[in-house]
Structures are given as C-alpha cells and as structure tokens.
Image (cartoon, rainbow, N blue to C red):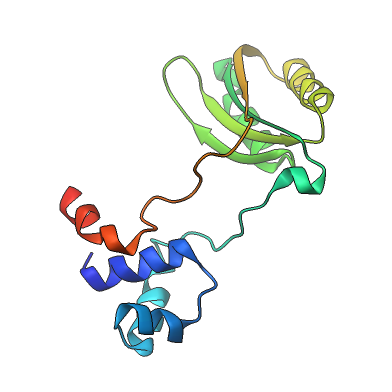
Length: 156
C-alpha cells in the first residue's frame, strides 16, 4: 500500500463523511485520485461504512463483552444464531478456551441475563465469561492519524 492510500485511509478513519474536496485539500491528492482509490478499496480493504453510536443515549445502558465456549456439535448453530441476533453488535471467533466473543447491547442487566439464560437453554454452552463495558476509552482509532502514516507503513 502506498503513501497516498495510507493518507486517504487515515482521513477516512477520522471522518468517513469528509467531502472528497476537503480530503484533497488536506492530503494534496487530486479528488479524482481519491475517488478512484476509494472505489478500488471498497472491493476488499473497506468492508463497511458505518456510524459509531452512543447506545446509552438510545436507552441501551448495558453493554458487555461475552465469551462463550460451546459443545462442538452446537458450534455452527450458535454462530448462525448470534450472527442474526439483534442484541449482538459484534461477533468474533476466538481461541484460548472459548469459541466466540461478542459485544452485546441491552437495555438493562436483566435483558442480558435473559439472553444468556436463553442461550444456555438452546445450546450446549460449556463455559461463559462476561465483562460489562463501563466506558469507551478508545474506539475505532487505529490508522486514523494521518501524521502517523510512516510508522504504519514501516510496520508491515
């Protein structure tokens, strides 16, 4: 990946809604080049354009990272179920004694407990751990600083 691409990505990570003309002014890269590079990267590197939300302001006051270990025969079914469940914000396949980790978003703790109880009734859950997310300290900021593009590039 070249320096132009890294600059474009850093500005996109900072503000995905930034007008291409403003990005062009900040980076010194022509608008047409930025447009072409974004179109190119949307076929592989850029997987989704989205907004980060403050869920508490929407009435969802309980967020937790939940790790689950499930019986081998239920693994695929649980993965499919979690992938479609509206309370699951993010889902990951992990290791070190667990199969999945998810970020769950709930209105209150009772809703999370009901969710976990339902999982244990439907699937052969062999282990679980959960950690309540109290406060976001840093979120979605990797490669968001255009001034650090040289260190990103030299790392890989």
